[in-house]
Image (cartoon, helix red, strand yellow):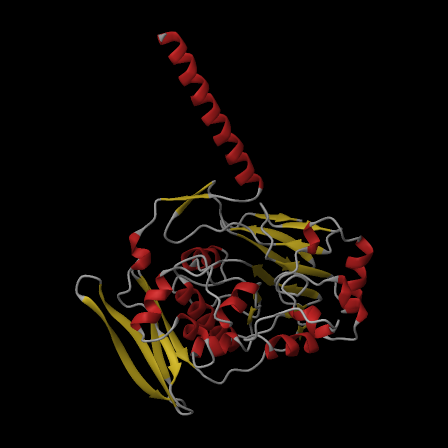
Length: 390
């Protein structure tokens, strides 16, 4: 009897181990991870902010959250004139660091095409990981130890999905804003390309946002969708950005370009204008085919398309799309990869990798990667500066 029970238990244990191994293999093959060791500092709201809102045509408020769950929360709010020079800061609880920001509400739409021969570093899908983002830039000498821009006239291209799925959305967005201001002064550029998760936030869709920001909105006396609406400073700034840009002959967009674009006489400027006009409007399919429907589609649109990874496109379709825009290659995020890699005879570069999270650990452990383009070479650039030409 004891022997039968022992055999039975061994069989159950073996089955459990087998199922676990199959699960691990499936998760790893899909670029997934297990999360563990969550740090409670992620929901620390003391000094959380800044949250800046336009109160009128000439006044905006700068808001920080103070306090804690035991003693209660309150707002530290200051009002400023729109033409006033204001210096603010953004605090990061994990290591008790902060960085300073100078506000400038004169938002300009970026141009669509840049051609200056300078080096390019592209990274995507940071997903609210401020520490990951900051440390990658520091290790690869885009910023210095004081978090200031040190990339000269270079191009830092952020290929979408820098928000959601994490607890440092506010820090990430203000850090991008800060670097953009500093880069301009040195003749450099920070290109913030809009991805589908930026669209989610601008359209008030928060299924992927951290629960932390429901609490933040409540303390601010607002709804979640107000955090990035057209009364929000950072939301209005984000809505000024492009969906696609070409830099030194390379196209950058979050998802990709569906080959149906070949049916239309449309320029990059046209694509960006149509996209910006609709950032705050939820897409729904309409009966007629049009270039607007294609650009905005949540299946075929530039911020959503995954067609480069389902083996249904031909090399000719890729080449013809690039030829339409007089481009050499296209760089995309959105679809997770194990490493930064090239496809279609080095005409498509996929750079969405699994980045570490700020407030939790992951297994299998991953390190950040990006794509460096220098002297017409495409280089997989790791966090530790290791570089591999693709």
